[in-house]
Length: 445
Image (tube, rainbow, N blue to C red; front, side, top):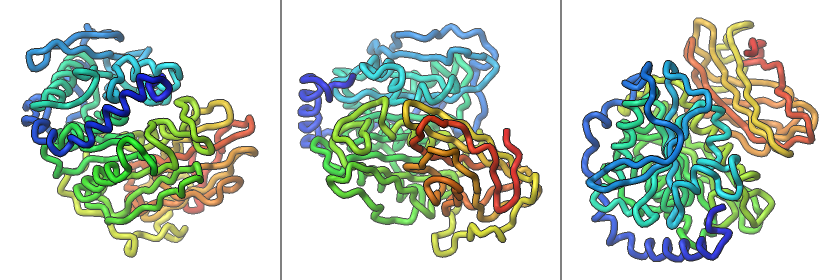
């Protein structure tokens, strides 16, 4: 798979360490120029010029000229690509001395880890792009790598059908640094980013506007100290208007992870932070000192974070922050229940071996807003929740109640929120089947 499991990977990590020491001097050379007008417009536009066209781009390796240089990239289209359907567009960035092919194929872990696990979980809902960095890295000298992202975005949107409010970037190590640079410099283009074990190595041109942000980092990262990840995270804690905090992190030796959703963030601009008891890796496994793209929790965590953005309406960056925890709406059943038949739930389960993820979308089909909610359901026998996203879950098995967090307490009429959890199972991977929202039964689709 990745070089963490080979001498080449160890050399890559040593080179990354050297980059950290040089970072302060490098950043000045990495600042990017402004995005071209064709790319940097508001992301609220619904679809692209490629919609309805017979595409010329195909799955495979391609070449594009960018900044006077031939650059390669790997494109992966959904197997059932429909030119009349607007797809999400996701960029996967490789690590130092990694390659676009490593990202696109998943290496020795295979399809389950392609594009950091997002391709398999996306179930043909996403167009994926894996660009190749110069010298197998993302120095972004003179903004050349941001220009490549701009050029690829323009190319794909001109030939394929893309929902322009659904652009994402993710990467590990140097790829995480580049994802952070994209968030800083293209906040009106990219909806959200996920940064695995990153640092400020590719620059942060701009860096003052909100972008939904998910940072993941090991507490004893020996290559890019976790302080780097915290610093990147705090950029968007500030930009997104979240309430500053020192989120809990697992103890060394616990071999666990803790996911924290910040409160008080501007509506539509959440910040999430996951710290794990481990070293420099994108695919830690709870209960193990090793790593595995097939068994890690990170792919599902990122998938669920991105999956909450299922609307083509992008909130205005000038939106007021959500209420602080002290003034958050109560999730008690007395808070504006929608009434029987005024809610709809869709539950999608992705299962493997002894684990699964569940993505639950709750739609308010009533005529009044739900202000504070709790969703009750019974997990099938043998299923136990190990972590969750966009809600608090209690207890971990049996009759479970998922309660809103501060930033998603209100569900307007016709609106929806998506929550999710990861669980272990003993063979039964069925969905709960029935759900009640604030005590009222929901229809299930």
